[in-house]
Length: 481
Image 1 (cartoon, one colour):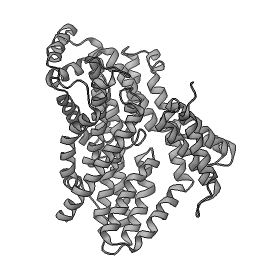
Image 2 (image 1 turned 180 degrees about the vertical axis):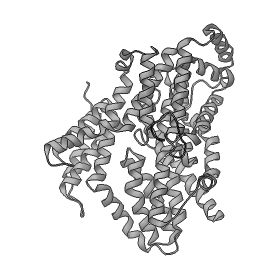
Image 3 (image 1 turned 90 degrees about the vertical axis):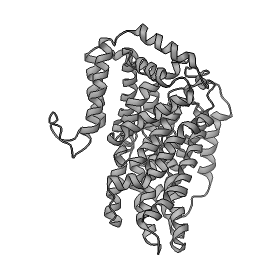
């Protein structure tokens, strides 16, 4: 590995924070743990080394240092805890799904159909990708299953049709297509109560703390003005930000039609793969909803990750993929180590009380502010502190109670409006970093979006989404009461 300033920058960040006097309210252990976390994030942004290596080194330093657990055996168990997280395995499973799409030929066929129908202009493909996610969102509670397990394996085949591969040729069209898919799922995750699992968890917390209850239709109506606008805007903004080299390609439509003719009717493996995908979607939709009875299950509930394991097993049994294909999927295992490490490290910030210290330190001065200023500052804090989290669920559990408690203490502030702005932001904030939500590591590891570009695009879209929340949703909520 070639050494450069990027290699030493994370070490410098760690050393500077480590040597800074410990702030009031924290102990040395908490502050030094934050130094490790900041160094890891710096390494990811600057691409000091492969992302999996950055995360693993940071996790090792935190574990050996005993920052979360002082007992060596407990510290090791903490280090390994993230490797059993269902979300991590759901992401790996989504990569395996993409192998099935690729090897069976189904992914190429579906991509060719999309290109034949809407591939004349690049922007048309963007809208096709966006509306595909929209169709699945209301009934798929896991955005990792929806975007990572269903949308990603299909759209990842589209760039190759245009000669756009991960790496030097990604900018032809691949970057645009992949970013549009990722940025869209952040919008659809906020648009519907049932499009993201933490949405329901957030409402449960709000009901217990401030006695505010929100139904499916009320949720949709409150977010619809921004949600519909963003669905129309995301492909266009992605087009402007990503600047695809291929703007239009009329000849590709004719070519794709010829390629479909060459493929002939769907093969046996394509039919099997299609059936398994439909099976997965059925269980993701029905098995994740406690109100829907699924006679084939021992209970009404089946975890989304369990569904992935079932389908992968069937793919192996039916010969759609081989076990050697899974072992050879380098991107999946790099993401596995990277996201596991980040998930564990960000959870550690909450476990040691660092997040609580930040939240309380930010919140206390707001007690005497005006309702409007307090509302804006609390929502701002709730949205952007997500840089410290790799799980929307843990973010919700750790920060939402603090924000609602502070909001309730400000005379004249509408707690219901504050709560809705916070819960609507849960899906939107998933766009800001390559670890902010389940699908993010997949698109980050695809090779189509440069590592530095991912952070830049995330900031641009994060600011856009956040501005829409304040400029459109807030006045709308105040209008409808």
